[in-house]
Length: 251
View (tube, rainbow, N blue to C red):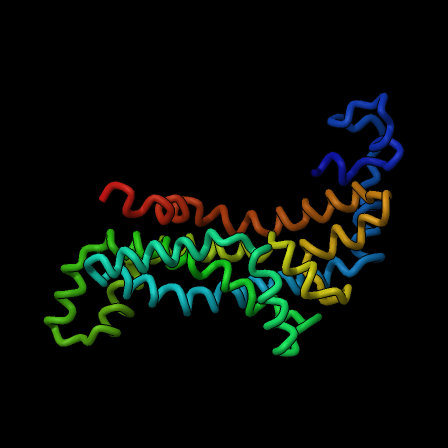
């Protein structure tokens, strides 16, 4: 991404040049000037961040209590509900597209970011609930029972005992949900057609691919900017992320 973003167009499309080596002085800011001055890329980043954070918040509000409740629901009913939730996540988004488009149109959210904010949690909530179920089951239930004996109600025990212990799993859910919202393309392309309201995943391919003309340097520059923005947020929590993904695997 970096090499392509800093190369001249004449070097990118010259078949005699090694594509992995800077054979000529790099353009430095030419592709980034196109990206930031001739497109709505700065606004796309703000839109993507807003949609991603909103999706994370809604997903956690729905999935964390559901995962906790299902993890404490014993017997075949709990197992069947857990499988049903995970199977919901496996439904391809293209099968839900027509139904969701009708809902978005009925709500009047077409060409508004709210269309993505209310759609993306339907994709992330089932998987996050299923993921956190395994994490809550791996936590010692005796701690919760001790809190109940000491006079705490169920909600207080959940809030003050279970949630702090479930932090690695919750961080895993946050990273997964935010990444899903940033990368999603189908709904972002379909529900929002106004340029300044698009997210990065839809705005870059629609505005930087014009017919058979690919602005490869600017496209790679946008990917580089987004990667350098997201990586510092994810890397400090990498150990927690791995811990959350593997929680309950050995139980």
